[in-house]
Amino acid sequence: MVKLPSDFVWGYATASYQIEGSASAGGRGPSIWDTFSKIPSKIRDGSNGDIATDSYRLWKEDVALLKSYGVRAYRFSISWSRVIPLGGRNDLVNEEGIAFYRGLIEELLKNGITPFVTLYHWDLPQGLDDRYGGWLNKEEIVKDYVNYARLCFTRYGDLVKNWITHNEPWCISVLGYQKGAFAPGHKGDVEPWIVAHHTILAHAYTVKLYREEFKPTQGGQIGITLDCHWQLPYDDSPANVAAAQRGIDFKLGRFADPIYKGHYPATVKAMIGDRLPEFTAEELAVVKGSSDFFGLNTYTTQIVQEGGGDEINGRITVGFTRPDGSQLGTQAHVSWLQTYPPGFRLLLNYLWKTYERPIYITENGFAARNEDVLPVEQVIHDVDRVEYFEGYANALLQAVTEDGVPVKGYFGWSLLDNYEWADGYLTRFGVTYVDYATQKRTPKDSSRVLKRFFEKHIEA
Ligand code: PNW
Image 1 (cartoon, helix red, strand yellow):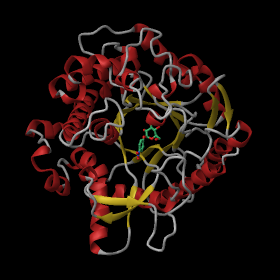
Image 2 (cartoon, protein in one colour):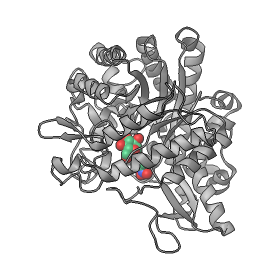
Image 3 (cartoon, protein in one colour):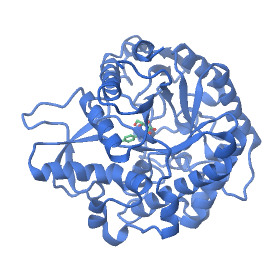
């Protein structure tokens, strides 16, 4: 087989807070990102998601755009505080918010586009943070999360057959509770491990609910999306080879090992000690095996050396410079991203060998340099993003057709330039240029390149 199987799904991904805007319209309650983005100096350009790409109002235009790009699927997230403004299990449901996503889902299906729905892409209802500290409170957050998930399964599960619980719990726990770079902006070396533990539990009890009460009649699949950069040892010294594995354990294994294997990685336990919470036997039985597929967000590869002070990453030092001084690949607009397709192929092989689950790439993409300052006429010829997607799509094809890795789907990040969290509107990841003054959308060359690639490489 030299092509992707005929049932291969591909499309683009977005997230509610990054695109919807209308932050206080339609009965929506505030999330921790509404609060965080308004704290001075947290966001590079001082912006917030109040308007974003205005997709709460322009959603039909977005679906038309997806259609024109030839996609088979669309991954978006539900804003929890749009459907339960205060967030909790005893709080009111906002029917206007419910109807919004119902309309979007129906419009997608009408256009032959399969919805992949993320329940949680970082926008925790502010009400829950205020009430009991949000992710820090195990009993409360797990119950409220499961209740919110139940609402979504009940209202949309007749039409939605592909569910993702969390997007990137690493970002939730590390950027939100260790580095303070994301909402709610906490810093420390205890909370990130507690929060991570609670995200795993909320995920697992949600999957248990789906499998017991919804799957038998609705028949869909449910899983989690984790993020990882491939970790390439700086050289073949045993210390650097071990450091690269430790980098994977700290970034990915600390979520994937409990979920797919039923325990935290030994390397993580050894370094974190008592600060790593333990699962009870009952919890573990729910956590182990709690994902039907491996959802992967991946953007780059890091070159890894032993040592360095950052415990949260397993005391490794990462960079993009090889021993001979050369760079790994083309530098993106963000410091953490260079293009390196071989790392993608290696990562896919590693995941299949290690976790033995079918894989969905739920995000993959590139921010080309200077798209924030260049005129649209130049931005739409996004050569660096085209190079990136051609390289990564071919690596994917090789992983599937030559290595036999069962990748079932691929979502480019992102459909549109959008609110890039702490980077505000300065970083653009879209295959569509958005003029934020007018909300006019203009396709970039990369959107045509991916369309052609999948037209050509999926079995009829
Ligand atoms: C992902 N890092 O986040 C998110 O899922 C998207 O919402 C986001 O827009 C996209 O990638 C692009 O950044 C990441 O620091 C945030 O390595 C940070 C990192 C990676 C991914």
